[in-house]
Length: 287
Image 1: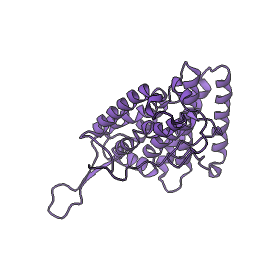
Image 2 (image 1 turned 135 degrees about the vertical axis):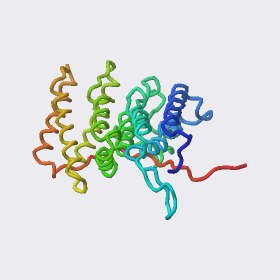
Image 3 (image 1 turned 180 degrees about the horizontal axis):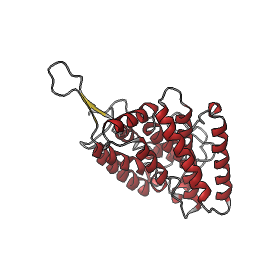
Image 4 (image 1 turned 90 degrees about the horizontal axis):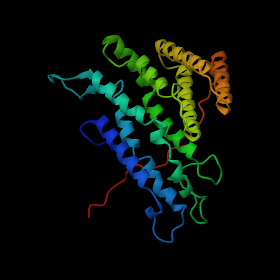
């Protein structure tokens, strides 16, 4: 895997998230040069916000992963399933990248990002916005959550989780992964309305990923069975909650979406999340 660090990828992701949190806490107008427009801060903030992207991808590959070499006859090691303890550690680290208290942009930073100044338009390395000229903190969380869930719930990966569990009950299985995701999303609520809205964004991304897996054809029926059961479990979690105000409306709509999907899963089309900005390292200055 490119661009990951550390002898222990999960421990390094925890470290990366701590560094990211510290840097965001300290982020201010001092991150741009004198006389530059405030909208330039958004460009500086993008690689900081997505600082965890490559380590997240690396850690996700541990889940349902294989420990192998390109062995030739006579080699002692050919291929083995990834160590279960290492996988469970990886899952715990990945769940942090879905925690809205971790990936949500602090409210006291939002005032630093005005509409773009003339001559400083958004580019492919900028945040996308569904709010017109306004900075979109919901979109940032949507993109980040979609990134993690897309890695973690890749159809081939979840298929391996089912297979590996059948070979060794100590292996991390798809049921355990989905249970952990539901516990850290739909079973969580936030006291602060801003963070609850961000929680709704993450929850919807998980539901979309489950709809996608349920309707995906090149996958085994066992995966469909588990995913469909977990979709129904989410519906029950929502129905048994006692929300008030706007959250009640959101929950009613989510139940409607689940019921509509179950009636005709073939009509599901994966909604497009805001694209993660370009930012892969392309070189370094060795001077």
